[in-house]
Every structure is written in C-alpha cells, then in structure tokens.
Image (cartoon, rainbow, N blue to C red; front, side, top):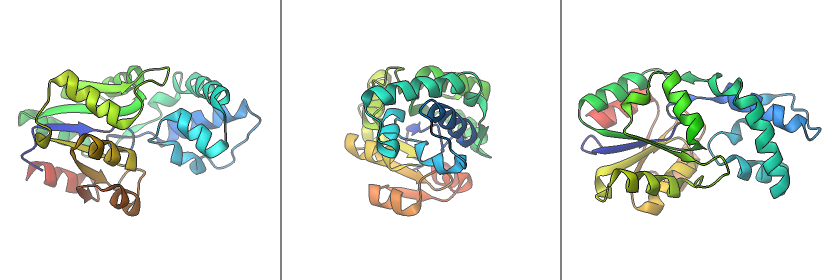
Length: 217
C-alpha cells in the first residue's frame, strides 16, 4: 500500500478516539425521550455509522424522533462532546510523514464537516489534509460511498487504483468497495476482525504501528 498516492481516512475510531464525547452526547439525547442509560459504553455501536440510522436501528425511532434525537445530541456535542476526544498514539506522526512523502491525504467521515474541521484544527492535524469530506448537518451525504466519491470528485481523482480508504468499521470498507477502491481495516477502533473481514477489507492491521509500516514500507 506504500505506492498509493491518495489516502482517505475515516475520523472517528481511526484518527481520534471519540468514545467519551459521542457516548455522553447520545446519553444526553436519550434523556429527552425518558431513556436513562446507566452504562455509556453500551452506546459505542453509535460510533461510525450515520447518527439518524443508529437511533432508528437501536431504539426504533421514526424519522421525526430521530431528527429530534440528533438535535438533542448536537446540543451536548457542540458544547462539550466534540472535544471529549483524543488522538490515537502515533497517528499525528504518520500523517506528517505521509504528507512529507508527497501523499495526498483526505478525511472521509459521516460526521458533519463543520465538526470534523473543528476537531482536526483542535488537534493540529487540519494542515495535513488536502480535503475534508463530511456530511451536511441535515444528514445529506452521510453514506460512506457518497462521501468517498464526493472527495474523489473534489480532488479530481480518477485513477482509483492509486487510492485507499482507511477505516475501523464495515461502513468504511463497504463504501470503498462500492467505488472500486482498496481498503485498510484498522482493529484499534470500533470494528472487530469479523466485521472488517466480512465487509471485504483488502488488508487489516492491528494498530497504528502496523498501519504505519503498511503505508510507508
């Protein structure tokens, strides 16, 4: 994978560990529906997929309820949750090295682009990326294949064989497969080996060290 020119990264569970902020935001949103969550770690399946879909899947919300839940989520997330977050060890060094080697780096996240940009700037990573592809606040462009295609179009990338998607959940892998791109599944985030294998990841790595070795070898 070291010969790939364009490297697309998921954000949550791949560049940063957002567990505390996302689960606290979900907990806050569910209180509006009279649902009290004792153990916030039961909410980690919300990390990765589009929010509206997760409220419907895990709590059976209809469209209207899901919209209300997202609004409640953002009330906490925009105030505190966004920065209840930390970098995976070694990821900043990897990004800097890749940039120095002339690679074009892109973020492709289901998180709204407005939040993704703030988070990247907070951690001093924004300058490493040539483009940040995120969803709109109204939920448009939250499907991973749409985000990847949006990024490719904006960067004028047509030689997909020179691009790879790096992510921790099946959505990243499936999205890459749908546009015909290779993918690297990472096990240090929120997907497991079975999920990433079943989704059809080209390669799976255990940690940032293995990812670094794969991209720089």
